[in-house]
Length: 172
Length: 227
Image (cartoon, rainbow over the protein chains, first blue to last red):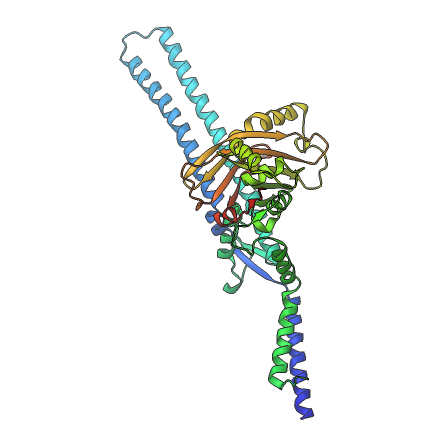
C-alpha cells in the first residue's frame, strides 16, 4: 500500500513539474505578412479611397488631354495659324503637363501616407495581440528568407487577421 | 475526514496545477464582473453618482480605448441619463420635473466624448512634437474648426455628421484634450445596430480611428433614478 502511494506522489509530482516546465516555455507563432496586410480592413478601405482619388484625378487629366487634342486637330486644319493660337496651344500643353506632374506627385504622397497609416496600426495591433495572448515572439513570414521553416501549427495568421480587424473596428 | 482514493488524489493534483496555470487573471476577471454591472441583463435604476460610475466602468462597454504608438484615444458613449446626471451631479437625486426638462433639452442627439493623450507627455496635447509656431496655429485651427468634419457616426446604415462639437481646451493644466460630440439620432433607431464612431486623424496622421459600441451594451444601461 505504501509503495502504491509513493508511486502516486511521484506521478503527481511529474505532472506538476511538466505543467511548470510548459509554463516556462517560450510561446511563439508566425504570420504570413502579405496575407495579414491584404486582409486588414484599414488597408482595403484606404485602397478603395486611393483608387477613387486616383480615378477623379485621371478624369481631370483626361479632360485636359482631350481639350488639348481637339485644339491640336483644330490648329492642324487651319491654313494659317496665328501666333495667338499657337500661344494658347502652348499654354494648354503647359497646363496639362503641370497638372499631370502635380497629380503624379500627389498620388505618390497619398500612397505613401496611406501605407504609413496602415503599417502603423497593423504593427500596433499585432503587438497588442502578442501582449494579450502572451506571446514571446511573433515572426513574420514575408518569403524573403527571414523565416526559413516553421510548423503549420504555429501559423497564427487567421487568428491575427480576426483580431486586428476587430481591434481596428474598435470592438475590443 | 474524507478519504481520497488514488484516482481522486490525482484529479485533485491536476486541478490544482491547472488552477495555477490560469494565474491571477481569472480572479481579477471574476472580481471585476462582480464590481461591474454587466452580469445583470435586467435594466436597473441608478442614482446620479451611480450612473456616472456605471458609464466610466470599462467592463460595461461604454468607454473604449485604443493605443496607436504613443497616442491614446479614448471614447465614451454618453446615454442621455448620464448627461443629465452629469449636469445635476451636485445633487443626489433628480425630480421628475427636472428630469423631463433636461430630457427635452437633450433628446434628439447621441452624445460621445473623445479624449486624446500622448504617453509620457505632460504638456498641452497640441504642443506635442511641435516644429514651429505656424504649426501650432494650424493645429489650434484644425482642432477648433476642422476636426468636426473628420468625425462621423455610423449607426446601422445611416452615417451622421457631427452636429455638436466642443473642444475643452486644457492649456497646460491636463495632458490631454477632450472633445464633446453630438450626432443626430437615427430616424429608424431600433436599438439593434452597432454604433461606430469613425475619426480620420489629420492632426497626428494616425489614419482612420474607429470605435464600435454594440447594442447589448447600450440597451443594458440602467435608467436614472427619479424622485
